[in-house]
Length: 472
Image (cartoon, rainbow, N blue to C red):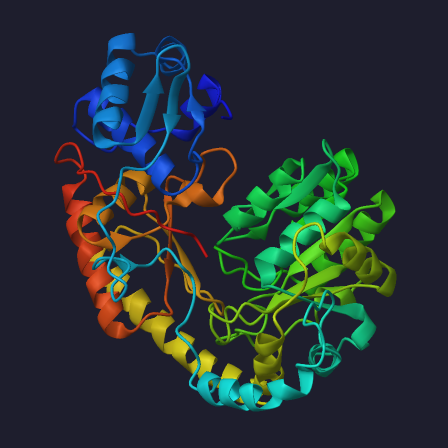
């Protein structure tokens, strides 16, 4: 059972009193509940003693004791005499197979429904499968036909690539985790953007890394001076970046900054890993920058989770041959290979990938425009950006109430990821990530739920919900 310090928890609940008129104990319980629900306090974590947290927050021990009692009563804490209290989730009612979210509208995932081409590609893959059944089926590097198809895709984007520079993985998250545990040692520094994809933070931390954040904003993009200083002063072993349609801000890194960042990284011995899972989801960007490795040494990650469907768990790593060989040797500690049938499905889909992307771009353009109008009409005080690609809008709420709003939205049947979910220190309470890949009807329902939640922020303590939202 891992402990959480009082200082860390106090940082995570920052602003807990500002968005509600509820009693202090109830407001604190609500904020800790959200931290548990969206994974910022992992299940099983031992939370700090009442006296320690009270001292950090500047409140009475009675307030913290009452908050903990409410969380225990609701099933969010387990307490054992002499061992403290640990985070948990309440026992759930049986979940219907036909309706696993029990009526919740899930906007915590920045993803699209399956492309119409998927069913035909799956049928074609099933017909091709018998040719592979004579093998044992454990494939640690990827089918040659798929590695060639991925290499050809990079070449078409302006980056000549050979199949032996490609490893096929079980999605992009698997690729991030494999790279992290292969390239990082305990105590190494890892450069990350802030905000960024929370599961990348988790993979880097599990590998023992110390995270070095660099700011990215919707207005100005990357903090270029901060990026340069972070690389020069800390010499991170690895840097994880999203230069194209950054998640969640939607920003794209300029060619000049790409080249300068990679030059600095090479001089300091830093391996830059570029997450390109949304790189080709342009909406109205006038030109497409080359893949990051065209500007200097870099490892690239891709997948079809954002373009085809999240249910097809296929991704890839593009790196120099010696890196691919190193990853292949290290891979068996975590898994024994990528499923053959899904690789065949993706091979067939890559043959029609341009048509798939054209459809996705039309869907995302319509979705972005629809959501932008709906949000600006319903919430004129919010600052709604207009990203030129990707799947998400990083909305500035104008007040540090993202966590409280997320809790209130759950009461209205809407699952969202609070802004601090994308930071490493409890920041971004003024922001909310809202995906625009859903249907107009779903977006109307989401905006309606947000409107009711926004109006309810100051109406007292929020009801308990035990739905755990996963961020994608």
